Length: 205
Ligand code: DC
Image (cartoon, rainbow, N blue to C red; front, side, top):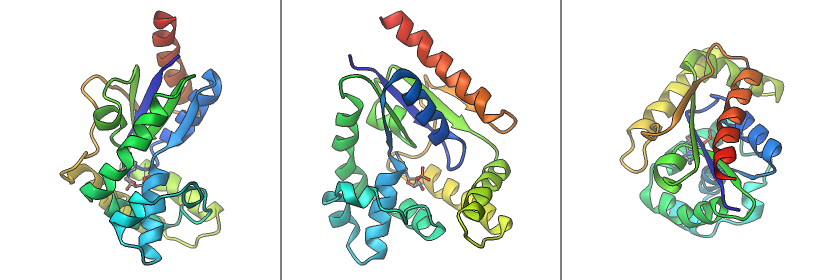
C-alpha cells in the first residue's frame, strides 16, 4: 500500500514530534527531510561545494550527531535556497514517499513540491516566540550555552529566508490542514494529526 503523509511548517513548530508519532502509530516509515539540508550544510561548512555535497550525499552524512547546532541550522537554511541543492534531493524524497507500507515526510515543501499528491497534508505552525522558546530549551538541554533572544532572532531570520526564497518557499499547500501548536499541548496536536490520518486511511481501506 502507498500512503503519504506530508507534514510541513517552520522550525520548531512540532513537525518532527508529530511526524514520529504518526509514523509509529500507523507503522509508516519516517523521513525528516530537514536532515538532508542539514547534512549538506554540514558538508559545506567542512569545505565541500554545495552542489557536490547535495549530489553525493550518503546515509552516513545524515546520521551524524552534529547536525542540530545553530551553526548547521544556519548553513542548512542557506543551502536550502540553492535550486541545484533542492533539485539534487527531490528524487530521493519522492521515492521514499512512495515506499510500500506508507511514509511520513516532514519539511517545508513536502505538500507543495515533493508530494503534491500526498493523501494527507498538514501544516504545523506556532508563533515565533513559542518556537524560539522550545528550540532554546532543546539547545540548553543539549548543553549549548545560548541566549533565548538570540534563538528568537535566528528563528525569525530563518523563517524569513525559508519563506521568501524563489525555489519551493515555505507555505501551506492549498489543501493542507493547519495545526497551530502555539497554545496546544504536543499530545493534543499529535492526536489531531493522528485523527486526520485515520480518517483518510479509513476512507481508502
Ligand atoms: O526542519 P529543519 O530545521 O531541520 O530544516 C533545516 C533547514 O532546511 C531549514 O532552514 C529549511 C530547510 N528545509 C527545506 O528547505 N526544505 C525541507 N523540505 C526541509 C528543510
